[in-house]
Image 1 (cartoon, rainbow, N blue to C red):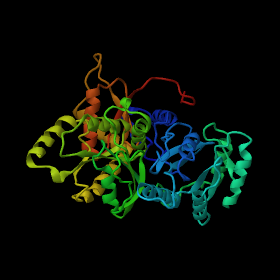
Image 2: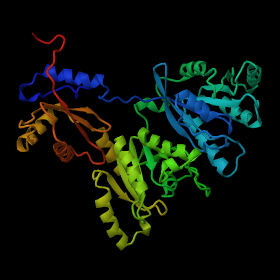
Image 3: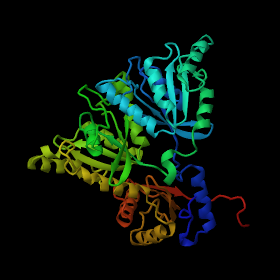
Image 4: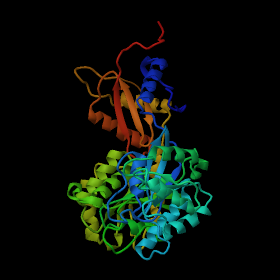
Length: 477
């Protein structure tokens, strides 16, 4: 618990000792925040060897998009895993083809970037097929890498497959670990081996937390991949004239404003997820996962068209996830004076839930004002990370409540005894009271918090804990 969390002011004569007990309860309930950088494991290999199935087995849930059609995973996708009490990130990649052309060439570049930024690598080979020319080419690249590598012989469903796996020693990457990602055979031992080679902290973690994570979301064809490419000055995102190119989130490290940012370009959310099928259905779920994993979200909206149900549904997902938010109105070069007046009305009517969001008018196509995204992102993240010292918070709150007391409830006036910021990311405040505070009064406190402490670009949560009298062990007698 940081020193700012301790109660420095306990109004109305409440004992600091009692306040410390309440804060201990918050910590026990997991309501006090923690943020620990995690090492990254990249899973690479040629198409259709079962990389995404293995990723799902490692993380213990179905997250990576899996279909019988080769090449469903076209980009780099990151998921959080936990084994034996240690957390790490698993990065799924598209199939690596050294002589690939067109779309497959772009996919190969994503896999190569994953290999260059990971802390450890799994090379997955189909043990039934055996090593191919592509596997040998990948192995040659990995043998030169300083990053630790584990060779995984997948699709070893029984003892007969062990001899087939042994033939993969020829790749020169050490002992092949025989597993069946589909059935789970050998994956426990593989996870133990992974922990043995993964460092405790990521290679980016020399200064702490690494690049800030930005999810880029919006409905299909709003210009998300084009914006990534404009920001990076390179074809970081797979852009192709094939419909639905972005199936999974794409991790791209982009240098902006003198800092490195980790951007995640995502598949556009369909109008009704229940009507989607196969890879499209899971891609929609991945977009939600990208929002949940992000620190700040850029919601890209087509300014030249009326706001849609899809725009508002994505906005609700972001607000519910408690992420910092920048709304970028794209295609501003197509907006005339009449459309601007109409858009102002739509913003007042449809975006009333997030008046605190940072807004930027841009054109990914022409590059108009895209440089303004960095200050907006930095402001939103500063607010999202902000912590208000408890003493300052309670002194301010005492003045606010004295000027505007809470409404009576059941003929009694609830007293706010003290308050603390229980968490950042997003800023979460807990008011300890003698009675329930109405929702309208909590919204009033939230508005005043924003005005006083400048939480631009970040949601602010205010909750109430009604104090109950109870005995504490070791309490004074």
